[in-house]
Image 1 (spheres, one colour):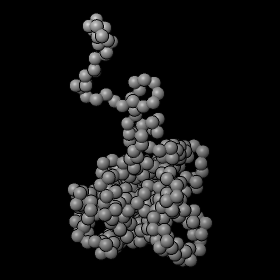
Image 2: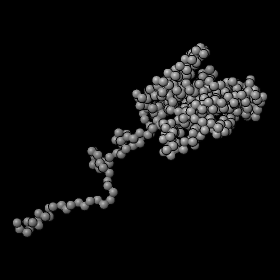
Image 3: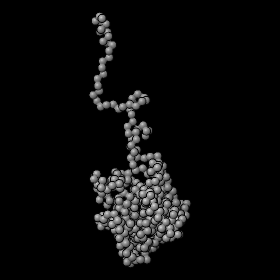
Image 4: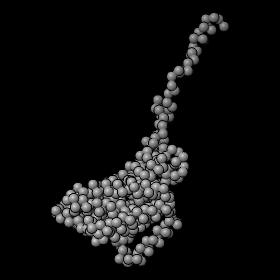
Length: 369
């Protein structure tokens, strides 16, 4: 082979491409040239949660429109159902996530209701303006109550909450300023026309749902919600991972006290009459336990289901008195034995379709698209 031929052959060989010195380029997937592969995506909402959120907003708008088309009886029923939902959500936040099983939440119902009546009848404030101020009393009482109760655990804590409620009931029954055992009537509402009273009460009940249900949802979706979930599952393990269990339980206790006090404000603003026997009735705690245990503890959806079920049962079978209460108690025991997570737990075990998305789901980018 001649030198000219060798030179021509070497000239046809392409030089080797040097390795890139910068950061690696994104991987490509089959398809158009240069298309980067989609990475993992954190999904906060599902199709079912979007539908559930839309239905919740629609129900709230319908509730706000009630004064323009519903009669007084229907509006009172809706306000009562809203009180059951808010009360159950607060008890669920307290027991289902905080691990504090209280049978004395009626203490804060009575405090909120009586604070409203005193501010309206004795201080001369408009009842609707007095409603937010009335929440200060449950908050102020909740602080020393927690200082007494936080050292107790399990059944001792439950009994302690009941004792606090009974002390408040007995003390209220001896105070002439609040009508002693006979109670008080909200005569200050007479300054408003019937339509104004109904509008204000329904809208206040709607605001209560936003603050209790919406506030619980916001809290559980925040970074504090992860700590609450860990506290619900195992307080010891949560503390070992850096969760301040005592501080978190205090915040939950105070939030539940204010939310429960708001229930007392709305309920007795609608009823226009309050007495120690009714405001501090232990049946309030029985209602909480039934709604949350049957609906599903440790979830947002469970108390909603339980509240609707209790409201319907109370309307259909409430006239049977003691027999009706015994039936509710037996149902609660049966659910606790055979379905500890309630009706929502049975449903969610078979169908993964939450109404309110609390978990973060990791999906591939091409699947999410």
